[in-house]
Length: 259
Image (cartoon, rainbow, N blue to C red):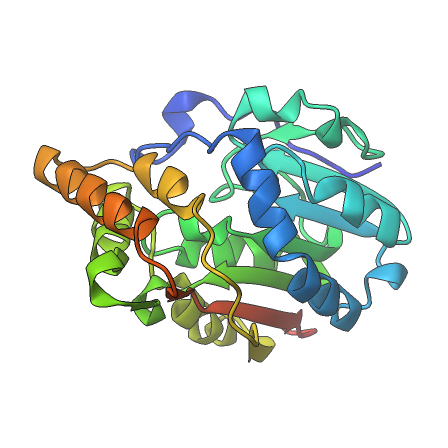
């Protein structure tokens, strides 16, 4: 069994950053499906079949937890700060109980895991997320790996210009105290903490997903920005032959013996 300090962190122990609510389960399930191919590639590179102690960091509704459990060689701990998400069937598959805690203060002893997985989670760990990187370095055993699949909205490409929502994404994520540029920020932060880092970008461009506007609408906006979003969404619904591409970083970071 893993050694866990407190299972739930008291509210006053957390930072004062607002805690955005998770998108609806059906939306995060679609996100997980969109990223299935790149995620499978990243997990193969992480040698998941040989990993026996896995942390699903920011597991949300648990759409990936079952996959991690199926593919790893041991048990999975699913961690999120939304208690309601941890009661779903997907989050009850792991050998250890789901843990409700803040990713910026992981309640595990040093060296508890040999794989930490993150998908669209470090994005939300505050700005900057360097403290979470420190926590990941602490709970990973020497030779353990962080496998992270995270976006970078600074490189978002949209055509035609009339449907472009990039600036709205960036503004809303900053307002939510998330990091819209987490993809480019993570590699140097990880290197600072002594990780060996390998980075790839998800190849190919998929057809635009209309659900992106539902995800965007769930973020905090001013009234003017929300009206702008409504106009962009209406134009997108009426525009054929669109191109929308959000770069995703596939990051594999291995902890050295001296970290």
